[in-house]
Length: 236
Image (cartoon, rainbow, N blue to C red; front, top):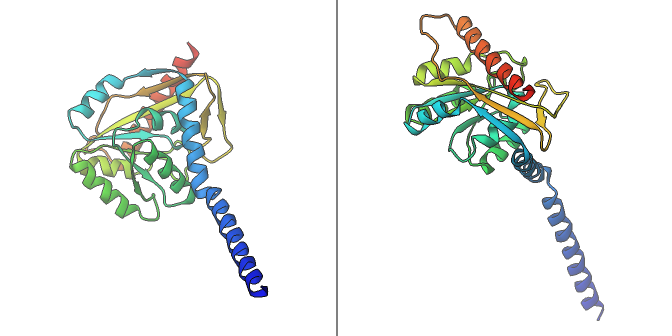
């Protein structure tokens, strides 16, 4: 009888431990946070009064199989991440924990991801994206990511565009009601039911004769143009 009680107590203890482990797995932030972000992103974007400008030309190029590199500021990802969903576009996500969360959310939306950054894993990730682009795929890069400085174009996107013979598409975004976080990228979260604007600049390539710094400045000026235009649209 004593042995029977001990066995049952052991089984009960094991069952409790398994239950606690299951609860911990359910509330594992690596799984929960991306799921919450995914649902929040979907819900907020569905509720927005979105105005899109310049998409027709870009969409025609995509349908024609042209390789495009979408240039999006790190802090303005919320709108284009949803709008460009389910198009099998490749996104470069950093190797950081935040990069893992972003990659998870994007993959749920139908994006494809390549992990890397401007420091760790840069050569390998850019080579992977280069191969995708050479086979007709398109990609998206945050030229000021993954750690800034904010709104400063780095050389990776220029190098990739040139080597893959692709076209760069500058993308601007803004919203009338929004929350800007105190992160390095001043991340913009559009609030539900606000007016929002997404602006796609004309696809272009940087002249080969230009120095790298001049090419970066050219893209930076085009990024300013599309983001200024997005701000103008929501104020009209």
